View 1 (tube, rainbow, N blue to C red):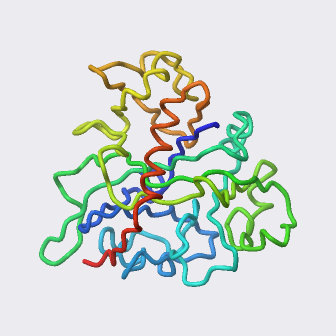
View 2: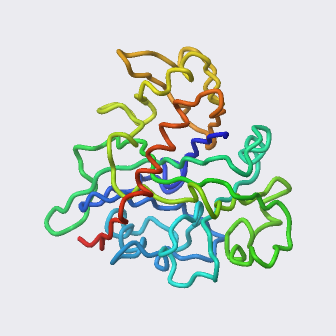
Length: 286
């Protein structure tokens, strides 16, 4: 099994802000804006709110109405879903080329992380917590690949993908455009609804690209074969923990789970824990 740490959601370039950790404690990953999309932030639901409502409170007048909903992991994000809908994630260009070169395909696992900051209610208004100015890289979701779509037309059983941005704009995305569709059994796809220290990548109190990883990642420290992170100066050891200066830009960082079984199991075990628990229902209201 190949594992891909995939950076997604708002960042300092796309949207120029972090996704919020809402006062209820829930992670609210927000997709990047995209002028050619057909999905409005006002049409993407998050409990009792829409993403447009949340964005307007945190950063008024700064966002286009259109969102690139990808990865698309939540069935309840949109009011209407086609029959037999499954989560999916699309990639194109150089990033897709990297995934192709690394052999990402059926049976492999995407681990999605992004930049998050705490929010508070101040004077009845939602705002970013000024004490959390850096924010942190936090894992918010996953997708186990069931199959890869790299050509059209879609098969009949994949018709639910018709509105996915990497299908709707297939030709514009270029020759390396592809869509990774969730498996129907096994780990499937899902979200980590709330922050826990086991899914936080950033070292406490440090800039978000300075990571402090569990000892399960020691073999990656030794072999340094996480893609884009071969430079030994990026890695270090602190007691039983592993430190990593993550690259400032880049989207897809891949390693071989068979070569690093403890790192693979670290992610798989946390996913299984989420899947075995009752879903946490929260209105995310504030």
